[in-house]
Image 1 (cartoon, one colour):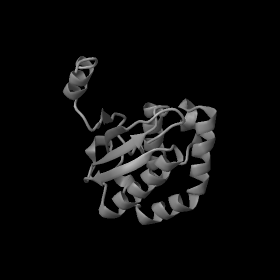
Image 2 (cartoon, one colour):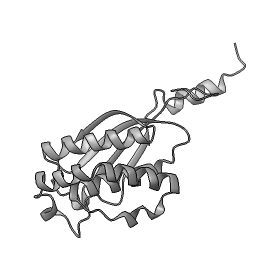
Image 3 (tube, helix red, strand yellow):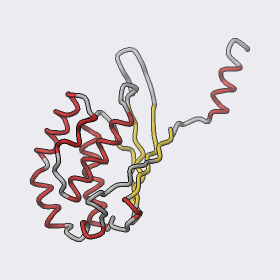
Image 4 (tube, one colour):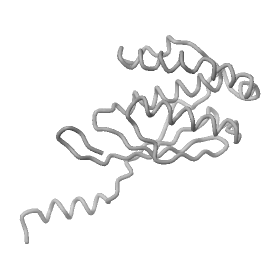
Length: 163
């Protein structure tokens, strides 16, 4: 990826789980979840490289710009997908976001209201497995997924100025 005065390749592997590891990510829910993740990421200038779900968690490989605040993006991603899937449309949960992000997520939410209504009809079985309507576990796993190892970078730095 390129910026005005930079070239970068920043990739991450993200994993988050359904609350209490409930096995609710059926094929249909998973497909819709992947669509939502792709749409939400695109609005934040994040490129999804790959996604895979199991019955109780999702793996997402993505590329990001250096300016993206990952914790805010991840929390927003989890909030929006949770609401779309379990149909909890409480806008006050966006209190941790900055004003531009609030406006962006509000726009996404309003754009997706019809989809949320469809999801309620499509996936009514999901809510009965949730505790207090919480879809995702509050924790997540995030690791950088570079193309070289730390040892390679260390050797490169150590060998600077040598022939």
